[in-house]
Image (cartoon, rainbow, N blue to C red; front, side):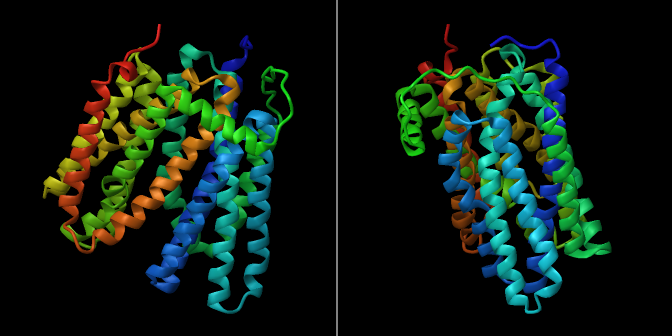
Length: 404
C-alpha cells in the first residue's frame, strides 16, 4: 500500500488521539480499583472486579478481530470509545442516586464489564491501523514511540487519579474520562486513515471469519508459535510484573513510599524501553529483539526474587520495564510485518485474548499461591522458566531465522 507523504504527521496524531483516551481510561481504572479496595477491603470484591475487567475483553477479542478485518477500523475505534464514554456518563449521573454500598459496587462491576468489552473491540483495530499508516521498515521505531507515549501516560495516571479522588472523588474522575473521550474521538474523526483494498469474496458470517482466522494462524507455523510464546510470556510475567508490590510489602515493609516508587520506576523503565526502540529500531531480525527481551525479563525476575536491597530492587525493576517494552513491541511489530494484511485484525484479536486471558489465569493461580509458597522463590522459578523458554525458541531455527 502506497504511503501518503504526510504519514508521519497522521501517525503521530493517531497516537495522540489514542493516548488521550487511554489517559482517561487509566484514571478511571485506578480510581475504581482503589475505591472498591478502600470501601470494602474485600478480596472477593476485588477479585470480582478483576474478572469483570478482563474476562469480557478476552471473550470479545475473538470476534472483534474479525470485525477489524471486515469493517472500518476508524469507526470501530470511535464506536467503542463512544460506548465506553456513555457507560461512564450513566454511572456518573446515577452515582448520587445509588444509596446502598452493595448497589454501588454492582454498578461499578457492570460498568467495568462494559468498558472491558469496549477495550476488546478497540485494541485489535488500533494495532491493525498502525501498519496502514507506517512504512514496514519504520514499524518498530513508531511502535516504540507509541510504547513511550503509553508508558508516560501510565506513569502519570496513578498520581493524577489519586489527586482527583482526594480532591473531587470518584464522580469527578468519571467526568474527566468522559472529557478525554470526547477530545480523543474528535481528534481521530479529523484524521483521514487509508482504506485497505478488500479482496472480493463470498459473504460469510463473522464466526466463519473467526474460524478462518484461527485456521490461518494454525497453518502459519511462525504465527502460531509466536502467539503461544506471547501467552506463556504473559502468564510467567505475572509474579515479577504484577505481584512486585506484594513482594515489596512482605520483604521491605508496608510503606506507601516503597509501593509508589516501585510503580513509578517500572513505568519509567517501560518509557525508557520505548525511547530506546524508537531511536535504535531493534535488531533487523525482530525475533532476536523479542527473545532477548523475554530472556532478560526472566533474568530480571530472578533478580527481583533473589535480592534483599531495595535500591538494587528498584534498579532491576527499571531494567525489567525496558525489557517488557522490548518484548511487547517486538510481538506487535512481528505480527504487523509477518501476518497477511487481511488477517491483521483477527491475529491481533487473538493476541488481545491471550493477554487478558493469561493475565487473568496468572492472577488467579499465582495470587493465591503466593499465600502458601514463598513469593521470592516463585519469582525465581518463573523467571528461570522465561529464560529457558527464550533459549528454546532461540534454537528453533525455523522460528528464529528471518524469512528471505
